[in-house]
Image (spheres, rainbow, N blue to C red):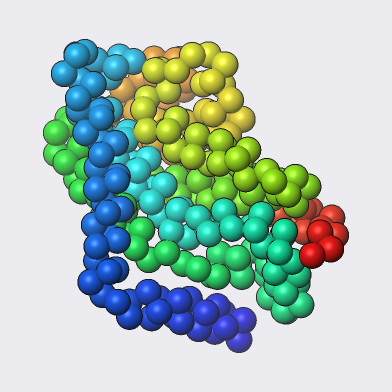
Length: 265
């Protein structure tokens, strides 16, 4: 019964967004262009250098494509959590507490931005290009990793979104801090981890498990050893890392909601 309520909420949002189809298609196109603009920056950069962090242009595009597709999925599903500080300040979050449904699921279903499909399509297109321009030893395992890596990355990104925005229950004006973690993670994962300095790499790669979004799965697909000395199995455990990240994010959200007292608005 609860699942039916969520399906009706999401369906109503999607029908509303599809009412103006020309506008919807233009918004999808804008999202795709925005995603591909970042790819253009990488290609322009390789006009000046032959390798970045020890990776060739096609290898960097592979990392970028996995990360971009994962972020696009997470942004469509969890991006509306950016509205949480406004909901807390205006008191509209209190309405969610009155319903016999998960507050997190209600927030995610409140305004699903279907136009972000354009970003996902652009990411998948870049992924197809990267796979065809890299020497990959195809097998059942590598084919499965191509599918699972963006999905696991999306769960990791969504978990980061949930945990970062949950801080707004304690710091009502903490949106900028949350954006630093969520969008900063996207910027980090779009390039090989070898590009970054040690402290930044340790924080975004392991404290926030950004390295498991695209860097390690990319190494596994390419059949390359980790230049940083990590063991080869790290490239195959992104689904487990995603599961752990989701559990931690759920606990952080639950703890934050239990301590929520409202702003008196």
